[in-house]
Image 1 (cartoon, helix red, strand yellow):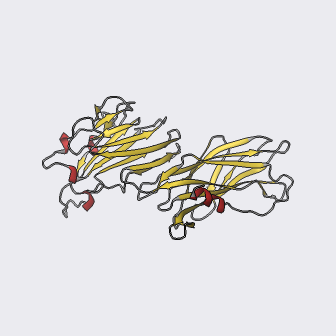
Image 2 (image 1 turned 180 degrees about the vertical axis):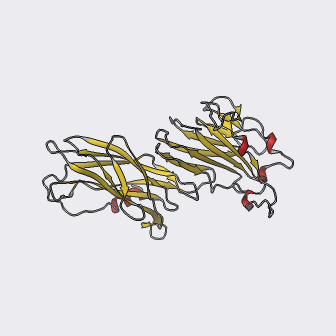
Image 3 (image 1 turned 90 degrees about the horizontal axis):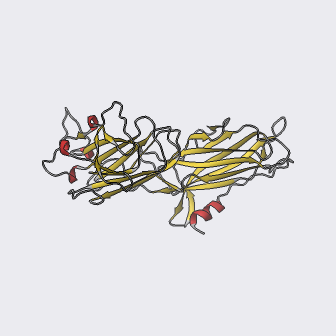
Length: 344
């Protein structure tokens, strides 16, 4: 049994005994939509999503005002004591997406970590499924979502309870060459590798903005430096983007690639730079300019918004100030409908 499994058992919530004759006729199953997500940093806020199903397990009574209540807590293993400790970081509620109608989730605590999801009355054996999404915290090793299905019985409400439970999502540390997020489908999600700035230690950064309206999926970005390139390009870097089985409305995915000035040859001009793209295991193609405004890429053929291609000045001035970490860097902004590898 691993540490987090043990911690989940140790941390399982306890509740008072319920004497209602209908107690126990409501049950919930809560599963992580993705086993792990990356920690948040700056404007990179990966989504941590749970799939929920609430069921009337009785055979004769309709359950009025069924609800799921729950709270997230962020934990880590203390290296000194080898025991779980609470982290001062929040996994706050972000959105919900009902897979059936008449479901509503809302915050019940000021910090957004406690929620209540209201469901319509449930007839015997009837169920409702939905998902709840929390923002990934900025620290910690896992999110514990402690939950319980409840329903109101009679007047005044009896608050009859089903069995409680807790479900964990692992938290990946900030990595310079990798990032993971769930894509709930009903909200924009933005995430990037590293800390979102290209540096000598992290010379290639990938930012991805997924628009609302996509189907639910899991997104991964995996980068390679001086590898994975279509041709022999000195200092070539690449980004593998995987969002399986997803469709993207509007302009599609917005992908920003940042290259640090330490990898750019003296005299090189950004106007001569070429971005290569490969869809799945196909051949590499050159990414051409977006011809429409707003951009309208097609499947298998991304396009670059040349108006956003930019070479930051190598020196900052009072008239043209540039943050130190951006001096001399290159930026490319691409719109796409598909997964694939980008190389430059």
